[in-house]
Image (cartoon, rainbow, N blue to C red):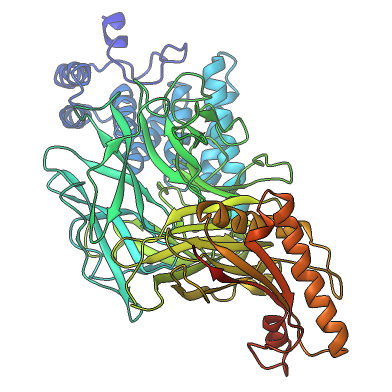
Length: 635
């Protein structure tokens, strides 16, 4: 009889047998209810098992095994408060009934925020000499959580979440918010009648408007769509689709591109990112070249790990790379979010020391580009509940997340809060603009490139939106960038953004870009040609701009240009004239050295004679110190 009863217990069973007292009940009704509960547990009918166990302890209030079983079932259901009550009843009846009671109680107390008592009970559990190695590891993990949480609660971080309001939140569940870099467009998941779809809201006068269905091209009635990310410019949506006909595994990652006010039909991004396993929760770097995601594929450290794949020069994604033991643990990591600074990763984990269940963490890259050990975001951002799905605005100041709170509209709502300074990523700003024809005002779809001047690498490579000419691109503080915009049949546009000072991120750059058609007299200011003060040797940082000029001349072989140099009015007029001519000649010589025919080039220095701004301010003088080229002939 005793052996039969042992087989139906749902405890951890880490190599123990129950003490004799309270193992069986002398009350036949109690014993029968207990055995019936065991059968219900076998078929995973946990609610029914709880009712049967409650009957058992009504018949026999000292039936210790029934209380133990009740605690185990409640813990399986993650009803930790009820589990705590049941386990405590076991200890009141018989403190030595079963060592695993202390583990079950300790784990349940961690998940209800009772860290002090949890620590005592988990240490008591480890005091038993017969604890298995797996039991030790689990208990030590929970003890680490307690030892982290107890002092952390004594030093809370600032946290004042604000509900996004009735435009976004409803009685249904809203979660997984993502926001464009200009903080003006929100996309999130809403669950209605067990179906997940995407909705979008725009910010007007500081408030989020009533959310609308994103697109019938993406949302479906037969499948769930969720766990999404959006590129900073709002043009590309990566999301998770599960059990689709074109799927490679249970869940795959898909992509859709915005087309005017709608979205393209999504497509599966395929191998090697997607696999026969489970891929979900994508997050795209600001330059669009690195995709972070969660996968259960082989080669990880735990059940769910965070991986990354990079976009190859010829298109397609590289073989995924695990982010390694500084991010992933033997447990589970979820919800990666790579900030636009490309240096700070936020994610959710139940493996690193925290407050129980899943907590939010951040990791920063070191100078070698390696991820450092993660930092818990602290209390009360994290709690004994589950926290996941954090999104940080491009300026690093505002965090968005979902939670179920008493002040909500029902279910999970989306909230925002000011992120404490110590938890913020590096500052990032953005350039937002419209490209249009200078004469007609017609919006233009043009190629947009943002180049890191220091190493001539692309930080952004895309095009302005067809129909509106709009574009938006992020730029991290601490570097200098060149903006180049080109369209066939037009002169290109050049701008420079020196973001090497922290104050550079105070406000974004809003630009209107009139492109001129290629015709005699049309003019381009080369904003990224650089010289040392009073010198005319081209600095290495000029390479990207010079290559742009070469590219333009190669694409337009009949165009003849004049390169002109200009100075401000500081210093001797004659010396300024000579300096400007030498600078124009330096550009001329560079083009000759790169196989541009001399017959297509002239150069001239104008000194201070053609200012485009007042010389009374440094800003004006800087505009006057410039290099240009003007179209002389087009045939």
